[in-house]
Image 1 (cartoon, rainbow, N blue to C red):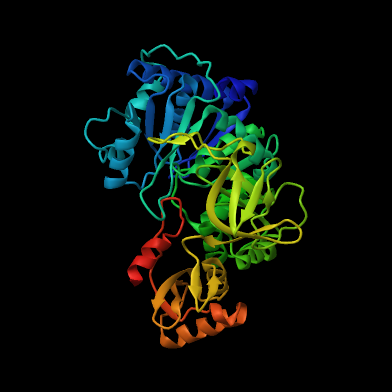
Image 2 (spheres, rainbow, N blue to C red):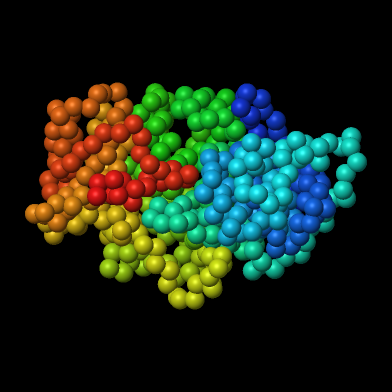
Length: 482
């Protein structure tokens, strides 16, 4: 098997595969044939530098064509791609190099300079020279016939509670994305799909271009910084049909733009953290579209979602298990029969493959009478106050529904009488912090949810600590209250 032959080469060469928009707004469309040819040339140059089957290649490139070409070159020759977020620095990069031992790093020169000494590099000027047809080049590399269990991709966990771990996904993971691509992501033949996730995040690795291509759609990548108004303008101008964003981006659009119907846009999807019902309602009212939430982990890939063809979205639900995926809830924790999941990881670097029948996600979930699943929080994040178990997400959803609040995080704070109380850290939208606002927010939460769940402590911050993928680091907030 080989992703290049099995997927890319099955399309007509001239069929649009990739629409790339750079920081200046310049756009270029790449056909499948050009991507195949150019990535084969890059793979040849990598092979000339000693990269072969099973060798790890780091990418430190933003959402640019060079990142896509580097990933495809790895898939072609059986090298193991390790995409890194461009915001990683110092210790994060040192950790990845120490664990993965890369044979080569491809990326932007200023980012490569932050790598530890001893890692061979290829910067974007060198990549451009490889792609220059006017210069002598190494022979293009042939596609290698790979085994389904061969490693294809390394994605580091987000490290919300400890040191990030290196999850290895096999070649079968690439084609296995068809399950979520067709049932949750939901692009169609000939459409334009845009997954806005930054390179280095597991959702980007599977949905920036793999999921669109498995559906026969064109993938859009944009190298510019996130700007809420520009995000909607690009969707409108380019005719985006499927938009896949992080919950944080949906929240920012709902708070900082005037949502409106966009011609051509027919499906919105989200994953990474639960979406607040208030945000889903805002998009339903402003755009006429539901946001189809989904759930998965770095190790598992997508597991649940509001699937294609399903009845109207239930705001706040993470949907139902994807077809064929076996899930169960044990003492509140969601568990996966990993043999039923075509995108389950192979192993962590330095550890043996997972050998048990059921994978414990560490996430607390409830199920309603119709089989819809509802995220309640990480097992480590649950707040126990006066014997009540309080999931942080429900408190955060109540806070975010207040017009003054842009973002919020709820964590446990020690209390001599109650054992613990709810402490909320709030990022404001357009008001100044005050004792009056604290009382107003507390009363708002009391009205929105059970009175015992209201935050007895409210603090204000300019921003919340987050992982590179946008997940809130609640462990860091808990530490700050100790």
